Amino acid sequence: MQTNAFKGLIRKEWLLSKNTFVLLLCFKLFIWAVVLGGSVFTKNHELLYIATSMIIGIHVIYITMMVGSGLSLEEKSQMWLHNPRSTSLILGSKLLTGIWLQITSLCMAFLLLGITVIFFDPGGTTVNLITAESIFQMIVLITVSGLELAMFYTFYWAIYHSMGKFNYLAKFKVVLFTLFVIVSLLLILFVEKQLLAGLHSILPFPIEMTKFLNVYIGEDGLWISSGGEEISWVGLLFSTLKITGLFFLSSWLLNKAVEVK
Image (cartoon, rainbow, N blue to C red; front, side, top):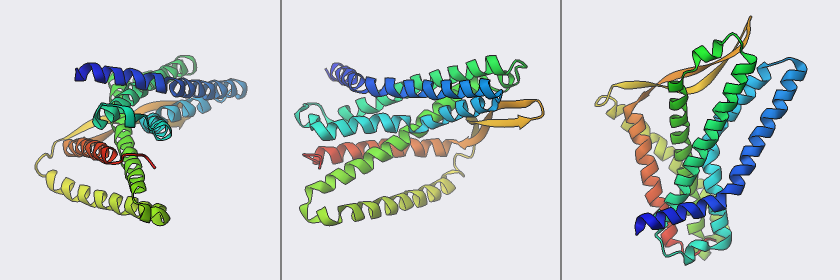
């Protein structure tokens, strides 16, 4: 029963998100096409490489945009007040929809990179520097980073609107919320630093994963390579704990917030 309900929520989120998804996709293609035209006209292919790399990198905020769009709609319509499903199921459906839409969009962005390489890198320099494994790792890390950012956004969104229940806070709502964001982020960074320092001695084995694209300009032109970085298992574990903790805290807060204000 829960599975069927979750599938229904996923379908609802897709129907609500598809216009935003198509709009972002068209905007991405438009930007790429404009830069492509400029690169051909000026014979400066470096512009297209840089633009394509930026299109890939900007996906780190993609899930946040999709989830934020869904929460904004909930804020206006108060639809979850009439939904018998738990807040965790509703919020989970938004996040899962945002994840697979981001992965779809990322794959399309890497397809644009492939087209760029085929037409503007006849020597195959970039092909030799970017592998299927590095692309997969970048998709994973961008998605995880995007999910963590989306959960922070959702948590602070829930905090802000939960404060609306207290009328005596209305005059100081923005100031108190800003202070809460600053203090909580500093506290999270402090705790994370202390925990990582201690846990690194327990799980000292780092893994090297591709995290970003490097753009190089040389005598033979411009090319792109995948940039590797050592990432600890502790860091990945802590990110997972943050995402999980923020998810349940946000669900709890939204359950307590009878009406978004």
